[in-house]
Image 1 (tube, rainbow, N blue to C red):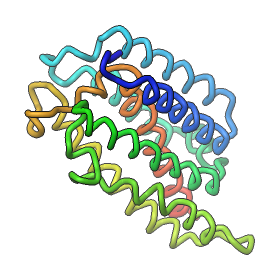
Image 2 (image 1 turned 90 degrees about the horizontal axis):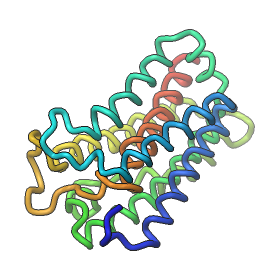
Image 3 (image 1 turned 180 degrees about the vertical axis):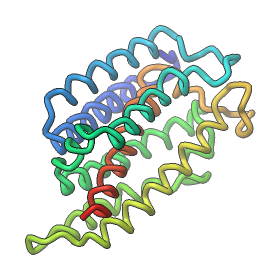
Image 4 (image 1 turned 180 degrees about the horizontal axis):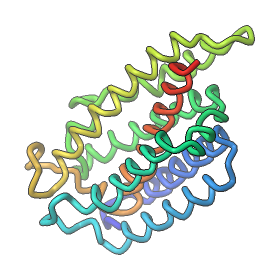
Length: 224
């Protein structure tokens, strides 16, 4: 853990991670998914606490190779696998939409980390991160899209695509701000926090679950 990280941020982000996991699992209604995600989060917490991700010389960065890439492979496997698609098709779209509210407290944490020089300024609304709009709009979309017992599929599709683009913008920018041989931005104030627990849970647990929620919703809406 970073010695300069305020304890309240540590506790808050652990709660954010747990809330994200709970919302996602409730939407998918899968005990197996719950066990799998908790085991994965536990592994990532251990790696973050051990300092494994702080090696800035590896290509690709360890946090990508051992934290992000496996989640992308898993998501792709679910999309391509029959049982994975069946699991996605049983998910609750309303819960998945409400889940994105979690992006508001995430952005608050990121803003605080930028102010104490543990994250690049690109990671806040003062930089190129406007993902807070996704979280703020989620309750409105959840209300409008599911009112009167019907589902506004067009609205869900447009919103999920737009907010997915906001997410990808942050993820790609963040990747180039991490101390590594591929770093292209924020050399004066790089993304140090995401290499340590609990913030390493952001790229390895929280963001993949949010990404997966978008993939599920878009697939469900397009399919129907």
